[in-house]
Amino acid sequence: MSNVLQRCPPLGSPHPTAGQGQGAPDSPATPEGTGWQDLANARAGSLLSLLYLVLLTFLGSAILLAEIHQRSPQSRNVHGFLATLMLTSCAWMLWFGWRSSQNKGRKLHQDHHAGASWLKGGLSLFALATLVLDCLSLGYYYELQHCTSVLITAFPVVQAVFTIIQVRGLACSDSPCPLPPPRFGLMHTLATNVLMWMSVVLDESMKQLQEIYDAHEPERSSPTNSCSCATTLCHIFSEGAAYLHPFNIEFSLFSSTMLYVVWKNTGQAACPQQPCPRPRGRFHLSGAFVGLVLGALAISATFGVMISFGVLAKAPETVPEALRTYYIFNSVLLSAMFLASLVGIAAYRLQRDPASTDCSKSVVRSLDVTLLLSSSCGPLMVSVFSLVAIFFLHINGSLHLLDLCFSLCKTIQVLGQNLFITEALYSRPTHRPDTPDSPPGNEWVFSISGGPAEEPVQQDVAARRESNCAICPVWILYAYGMRPHLVSQIEQAFYGFTLWVIIVKISLPLGIFYRMHSVASLFEVYCKAC
Image (cartoon, rainbow, N blue to C red):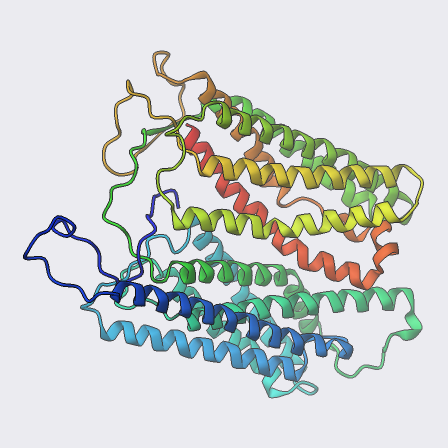
């Protein structure tokens, strides 16, 4: 996604030729107002498809929330509604593929930036986990066929077909296509993924709440429930599916992201202008030594704290000690990450000149920043909710102060991280006159040995290299760190356990996606600084 894509008129609008604008008599006459009509039609189509997404999402949300009183949103009505959405999305994708195959001679639309390679790789991995989840769910429902309907039993099959067709379509989204994808079909499929994500989040939240309620009030549980696992194989299917639900949640988020990218790029044509000249990038391990050492120390310390927290949190009497260890370590870690972000921002600001910003308005670069800021709402939401609970609950004690410090550090770190990545992505290395231009294309030289002493590496580039390498390994493991949000009693006492569980379940998938996106963006920033 580091290539440059100029923002161009919609497909079908006339492009100026060399003779136009210079009084060439032989230039073909273009109907006046045709370009404006195409642009108006494209904007109207985008607006209507966006409204369709909002209305369909609200409709599905109402259906899902209406079934919460049945102790799980996975009822027959919800299964039927989601299956209908998936089948119609599959029908649209198959129809579009058939239409494209009938017009192979027309190569009008090719989206080179329909998704980054890390996004497509993550989509494939999460899709594979979703298919395994569908197999386990099918076996689980088959074991409970005496108390489940045919619709619920067949739901994993429909989801597997939808997953395969969607991954196939998104994987080929950057190949030459005779026709641009219809916006309404993209929005319909995007709404389907959003509602699938919401359904799994609500289902997991209600199951966790029910388990906790049964543990605290055994008399309210229903041991005589006939629709429960009675065989060992059924328990294996149920426990295996529980571990794979987070992958299904991330698959829905990844699919929604790529569908949004394709929808945003629909109607955009690549301009014939050449991208801005960039110096050849060089990757030297010697320049990243300090950053790698700091990252290795952070990874080792995080493993130790993670194991300690897992052991201490098992016993109720050692939970305060586990939370105290977690808060202190993460406050120090987040503070170091925030300082690294400030160093990176200062380095880019000090070296900025009139030609240091990206010379094109890249559609994909804007989408990168939009997705980064949107997904950061997940960790920011938990931090802000925690701050509100801490301020309004007058509780004395060290855990209260440590939770306050941790929430503040997390908030400012996410904000500083977003500012640093945005600043770095929209900047380009300064092109010095004495530096030879790189040959056409993106050429990167990778080396694990120390660079020669006469290599013209400036001090500011080395500083940015160390800063980027120091923050990137920290993010890699912090994305898979501990989640003691449900262990702390402060937020539960203020919001209530049910509401707090729903808040955490909604924000955590967004936080994971944000951290993975940050790792990819920081690696791109690091390669630019090299």
